[in-house]
Amino acid sequence: MLEFQATKDLLINKTILVTGAGDGIGKAAALSYAKYGATVILLGKTVKKLETVYDQIIAQGSPQPAIIPLDLKGATEQNYKDMAETIEEQFGHLDGVLHNASLLGALGPFEHLDAKSLEDIMKVNVTAPAIMTKALLPVLRKAPNASIIFTSSGVGRKGRAFWGPYSFSKFATEGMMQVLADECDETSVRVNSINPGATRTEMRAKAYPAEDPMALKTPEDIMRTYLYLMADDSKAVNGEALSAQ
Ligand code: NDP
Image 1 (cartoon, rainbow, N blue to C red):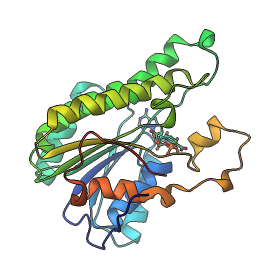
Image 2 (cartoon, helix red, strand yellow; image 1 turned 90 degrees about the horizontal axis):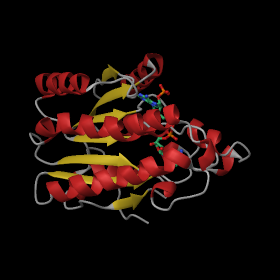
Image 3 (cartoon, protein in one colour; image 1 turned 135 degrees about the vertical axis):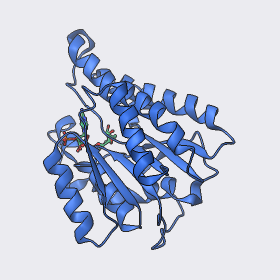
Image 4 (spheres, rainbow, N blue to C red; image 1 turned 135 degrees about the horizontal axis):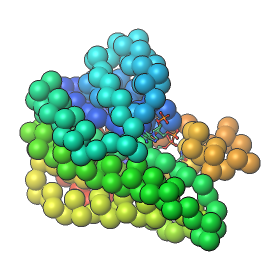
């Protein structure tokens, strides 16, 4: 268990981008980062959900967030370049990125693999965070200490029957984390991954329809690791695959 207690001003003056910030774990992370003082940039597909999170952040008295509506399935490198430029203009630097948005896709036997679905999952889970990170690295390097967090999964660390492209996309996520962490070693940018573990969200309910959601931890319950990796407390931690539970 991680021995770390978040103090009130933990993320004060930090600007943090969260993908998939409209729902589930990304929503909890955005609210939590804001609560500890960060200005949060909310990126996601469904604008209405992002607006709800925006309103909740304002209502809890946290710094005014920003919204970037973007569907990672259709996003291009130019979208990410423009995004990086806007962030630099508005904030000067970026202290953290939580790559959280993901597609689960259909689970089932390998023989039922659908080429289009495989492409979509790899685009959202691997290509999008890779090209987004490429575009954001210059503005991340402008921060005194920057943290990049990739979101993995238990099935991204050990393959499991019927978990298909979602599982091997998460292996790619871990690989991307390791390659980038090694490149960033001894620099101001650190790169790590989190496996959230079983958490009460829509994605989990889709993967385990027969499970009792009330038996699971909520996204709010697992925020300690998410806060730790964004805080300066973890500035010497690089290339680690952490678990939130
Ligand atoms: P949810 O399905 O609850 O939330 C996923 C978020 O990603 C939503 O906000 C969704 O936006 C966004 N998203 C999905 N597709 C796109 C897209 N094309 N473009 C932009 N945003 C998109 O999932 P969780 O909160 O459960 O999962 C969060 C992360 O944690 C994922 O990476 C997942 O793989 C990982 N994880 C979760 C576990 C769990 O038990 N919950 C266990 C292990 C790993 P919208 O709502 O607008 O569609």
